[in-house]
Length: 125
Image 1 (cartoon, rainbow, N blue to C red):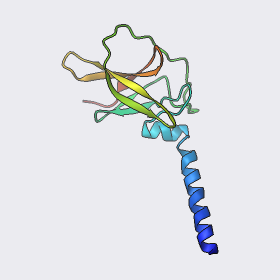
Image 2: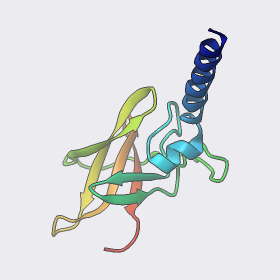
Image 3: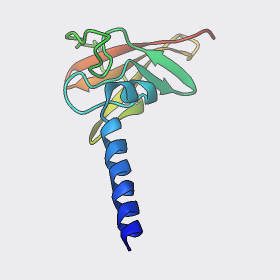
Image 4: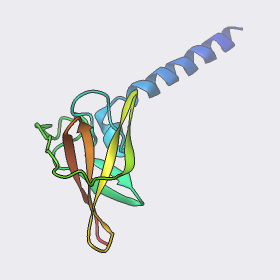
């Protein structure tokens, strides 16, 4: 009986530790999801088989300076193409900025009402 109690306590501790790790900026940046709150967007997101990078946000990690990064976007022709999930929060809508041939040049992620963060394509074609 004591072994079962110890095993249950160990399993519960592992679940709590894993939940805590999920809220670390490194984990959010590595797996490309947002953390709740302001400046929670990761520096790298994945869309349509490609990785995109932002130079103004990093999910609150200490190695970058999350500065005010809201940029207004002109025009109403943006169409949503994806979402960046948020750990215990609402998702962020992703919009594509496309070239004339239809290939994505970059992404805009809605950080809040009227606030967009730009992401550029990483790597080559």
